Length: 235
Length: 313
Image (cartoon, rainbow over all chains, first blue to last red; front, top):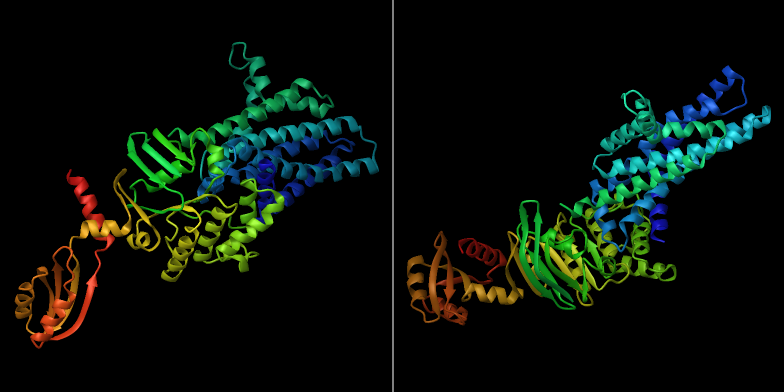
């Protein structure tokens, strides 16, 4: 019940300020540009290449969605009001997480227009498109969990965004370390990497291990977030 | 109602609270008084469960604030020091949101929110954005937020800071009204505030309690006899000798002289009221009594005395 109340407020707060409108509009502008350029160049009724470009766009936009969630409340002091209400820390974190996730899902859903264009004028293979969207959704959830964690580390939204972006990018490219360190690290870094699991989704494969990986990534970082807001109690 | 025992709080090496104990009964309005950095905010944060204590015990309504934090929090309305509010919500939206977090059922919520807003005098601006309100109204919204859901205990951290004199009086009256039904703890470093609103004062300095008493008792306990300031037209030294000869008077100090008008401060012996004797003595000698005022010992002096004694020991 509290989770829902917090989620509702946070979601509204995105629209009280211009953040949601700016992020939405510019994300759609870029996504539309990628989609149409790729379509014009490849003449292929598929979303595959466009989806990789959505991810790159998302890398920049996800920190902007998450940066304010805790940093702003810490700066203005409203966090103290929130944490002294009969609300569990985990409820606050989940409320904020689901608010950001809903905003992201809304952004993602609005790109379905492009799928509509493909269906109208071509004959796309719908399997990889749906699994790709599932992958994008799960990946976005991971980015948001990381971003929320970054937001608890500081009072400054800018720092929260920069730290969030760095974490996201690092987890996206950490697979490159595979095999380069000389010992048998291949499987570890490939497994940790967010991108290696994403490939299957775009190809149309829903690998249960990948789903479990993304979900446990989210759970882990939400757990760390809860611990991070408890840090005030250890000082 | 509130029971604090041997409370200590350490921030790494800094000891913010050193063994604090006090009790607050139901229905009391307690003023927590101390200079900046004395430990007022820390105490309030521990009472509200925002920070844990290093050692000691705090019970509110029989519940341990650390063990049963959630239950305790639902009994408390809290306004932190800087009155943090969500600036981009309207008054009504904000108070309803807090009511929702306090788990007030949907049927009751509307009524409770309305009542809290009206009690704090923000009912008529309920649809305004909080960021457009004046500081005084923001403060009222902060109190409305603490008040919604009818908590038994209200904890207000510096509720009048940064307000103009009219707003201060309004907020003090509001707190006084609230104190009729609820247990209120408020912190302040302004001494008139406690004498204006509280029936119990806890004076705290450098993490220690230096006095707990009612404002009146503190005044009489520490002030000694009555003090009277008089302004008299006449020769200053003669007036002094004359007054010093009177029975009820312990000491007369010169406060100033200007154009044949003397201002004197008269200290009476303990338990004596020297005002009538002074008046008749002045009149008998043919001097002109311009003004006579009983000077109450203010809490500032008491406060300085207490904290100074504390440092010496």
